[in-house]
Image (cartoon, rainbow, N blue to C red):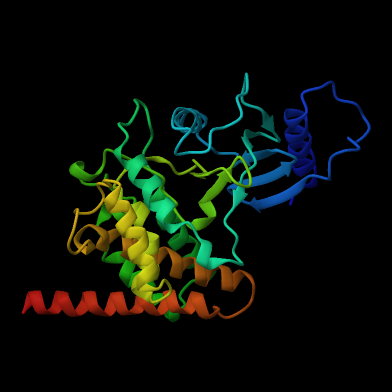
Length: 319
């Protein structure tokens, strides 16, 4: 954590929440800024009703501007940013400002808004894309996860099933080619999980999607793929998966057929997200000097099953 960056973000969020002349003394009515996240791809600090996010130094600022403009335009689906006359910069990193929203309560899984997530995604996917929206970054993040794993565990035979499952994905899912044309022109979130939903206004407003860093044009099935992968691995109960899927379909979501088996559309993205999860499990556990935990091992085992099945199918087709 860079203390100077956190301090600057806290001050920026505070001054945005309280648009009055700043003084040197701390505001007596406000708690100290809280660090919500601090990763290589973003540092997030909250002060009162405003959240400031410093994006990575190599962020494509034109793409970021297109994504934040989309969030402003789709304020009933995406959390809109706090308007700014110019993009603030902290330590060479572009900064966006957002209203604080109430996140999903991890201590109350039964209240998780799976239906709301499905409806929001369907509405997003059905929206006509604006000009100049960049590609969705889901495949790029999967490729980065595999690269992190290979760097963290070079030559480790335990990672072989993950690398094999990755190798057998089509090029577009590995971020090596564009998505198929008939699946590439939908607005996608790019990184859907329950941590990407908040209530705004907090704490009783409507649910909205947050974090536009990966939003863009692509295959809408990618946004359903993480829950699908969890379901296939046994981490998401079937009834919860069906609540999410049924709500998405009922809202007219185009990622999967209206009824019947959704797996023809979900297979490739779900395999890619399984590989991504397994690769991150290996990378994180190596960085922390530990073995993968139970959930991480479940995704690694799922990846091994995928690789084994694909090898069997390839052998059958060649014989």
